[in-house]
Image (cartoon, rainbow over all chains, first blue to last red; front, side, top):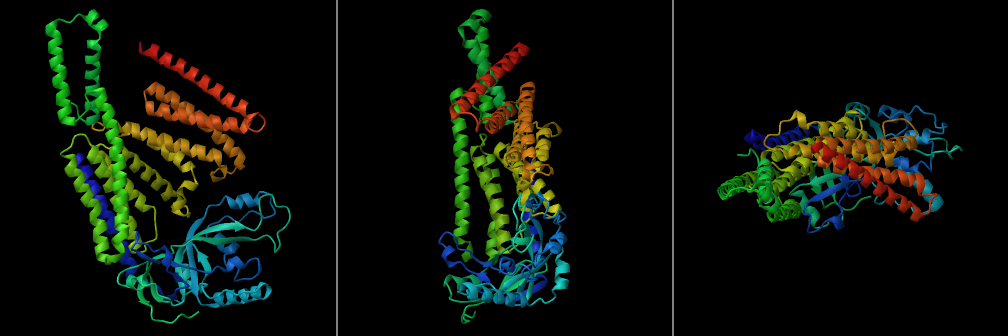
Length: 252
Length: 354
């Protein structure tokens, strides 16, 4: 019996590794999307690199149009994560916002797991530029240089349905996400907020860190001024880097 | 001969107490052992203690016991320091290695640490270095799956908790290590909650977001010992009860503080009051059950949480309208009252034993 627990302990380590490696192999056996990203989308935080951590990782950055709800509250692209999509993700959106308990009802709903479609340099990005230009005319200082051109446009509980709706694998990534619900009113609010009662969602978490393996990681140790990375998302929607080019001039 | 180190320690304690009692003048006067009887007893008890010490490295004197406690603490702290060193060393150099070397290294580490633990355990009855190396094996196992996840950008899931929990429990049963069992139960309870949360469509890492899961899971863990024979590890049922009791009471305390995390659809304030009173009753019930069944760890845990729940309730009732000195005077008076109640319970238990 005592020997059985020793064998079990060793077996658990072997089994867990075999399953993890089989998972990685399954992912890399297929391609769901493949895109070349620049440093504004796949960010290397050189200041975070230290002698204590020799690993190199890139952080996936995205631009959420929902942050412009205060500029264009009724814009369709801004309201991409609307009530219908939240319901499709499993959120209970049945309570009328005018109900005094509604804010608490929505605040108590936990974030849900689902999938999100991120579009690269598509119509959603161009809409962001228009909104940003409109904002800059009012307040000045457009800041689009280092803003990610990757914009979330759709979400669903089912990744396959999302891919059917967005079939272009060279410009749309489908990735797992944690999505939370939010309201634009507070508990006890009696007056309708400016722009109306709005129930929306936001991306609370994406698997945003992409490990850079050898030999690609060497290019980052020289802290390149600009770079492009070729990223492939596999059959299980997990990414890996297939190429790095640090010779490209910075282009925004 | 005893079956395990814990039963050997109990046997050694009994012999030591008997020797000390027989050496007391009043007992000697009452029993009036002959010189031959005394010599035979001395010889027998010395031989028994020597045999137990040789086989299980048990403590045969009070001073040895005190030193052993210190050694266990030092071994645990040493183990934690080695785990930290291991993780930092890996972090320092892994980026310079190709993927195949990274994977081979993290895969081999827990197996090597496990082999080292087994090698030491076969040569050491006291379990100090065994415990230290088991902690290193556990840390290596965690590092292994975390690193493979990072290398291949695998989306995190709750399944790693199952692997870590099962590994810790297997190591705990192999070497009779209570700390490893507590770690393993913690991982497995977290896995059960995370699995359920993930099945409902929520993010698995939000598993603590619904503390009510842990009330149910903790109750199950608390009730498990009678269903699992523990002939070799006689001190393991205490760990199950302690882990279960802590899971139940911490969850209730958390809900008493923030009722919005509950599955109940009542107003948050009502839920918080319910869990405050519920926590008081459960803690009191644990004290009672612990006294009746002879579970000191349950009595102590129940008493600590009873005091916390009582303090919380009194804070809500009295803090705003009472002068602060009076508030603390009331708390102090309640403490004195509780000690008196425990004294009565203790006296009752003493009479029953007599």
